[in-house]
Image (cartoon, rainbow, N blue to C red; front, side):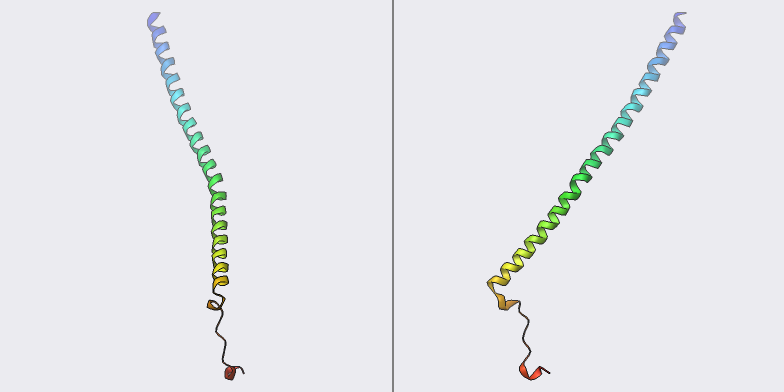
Amino acid sequence: MNAALLVEAIDTVRTLGWALAVWIVLLAITVTLAAYTVVAEVAWPCNAARDALSGALSASRALRALRDRPDRYRPQQRPLWAAA
């Protein structure tokens, strides 16, 4: 009777070990997907804000350059004899 009880205890421990291993793997997958989702949800607005700020800075620099030297970006005028 003791041998059967010992075999059943070992089988129970082995079954619980496999269940714990599966639980750890599933938990790791869940945590990885949750972390990826959080990173994606934070990265997209940050990239959009970076692009918007980059565009605003470029426009500001262009306007500042126009203000400093307005004739630099003015297209050349055609001569009067070519105006027909």
